[in-house]
Image (cartoon, rainbow, N blue to C red; front, side, top):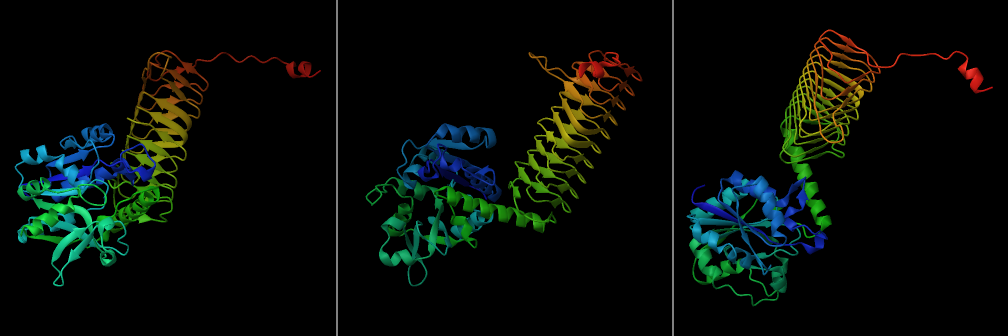
Length: 459
């Protein structure tokens, strides 16, 4: 789409959420509602976007700066209605060359990019001054009603609290999303009134004014009634999460992903999963994760902002902001902390923690081991209970374990230290000096036996 822009209303507090966060920052499937709306907007082809902030505006603005840096913002100092919110974006509207303006609610996460495009197609084709996106819902309570004439032509929008008794039975409701001709919108924003039960400036009143002045206006009815859904309290937010969960899992079903059971499975909308991968119960995948094909993830796995290669198995383990190769086996009960890189064919066994480290191909870290701030080569073997001691109380240092090294059980590597290629450390050693390639390092006191000690002790 060309010559278009968007204004997203995100100033509300949402008091019934019982949260000190702005309402649009409440999460649906781990993503703030405002993120869902901006993403749909961009996918539809609308790139020029202004978000109107209000309650705790700095929280929303900080999030936008980090995740959507090209989005503009405007500030609504008081929440005096949707019309007032768009008035607060007047400088933005006057500065943009766009002909048509899309207005969206930042707390309605299921407005789809297809709905946005189709509504604009109708808006342009009918040469409307305003086009509201509507939906038919079984329970219209709380929503503005679309009022139509006997011939089906839209004659207005009535807010729920201002609706007459006979209008309350109407099930076609406004989503709060509109396409406007920008010039007509600006003109009507200057004349809307707050003389109503709520004492607020309603954006739908601009549609009424346009119709009264003889301007064409209409409604695009979305096929999916989820387009109008929002949430006013925690239970409503949970309902949105359940819808998102089902929709996301359905999408992965269609892409060839296997779910043995969806119990406890929660996936971010940003997750991509290759065909043939099996997701087991209790698996949670957050953020922009990419999971390869023919993997087994779970049960009880937690993965955030990470990549997993093909044919890998992640069993009851947690992975954060890391890259995992193909043919890797992790778990159960392992923890991969941020900035770790696990190459192809590595085995990370039970109760292993890896932090800010690179582990190269074919290495085995079987159990009860901590590898932090280390560079580990190919085909290294770690025995049970090994630790890279990377912190001296003031600063961190790195260990370097070269290809084919063998780290004996209960070895402590005191960073910075290097273990050369094909070198060995004896079990129970505390290594404080570099180990040459091919050498055996023994760093433990000699065993001394006290014969007869037990008999004397218990005499």
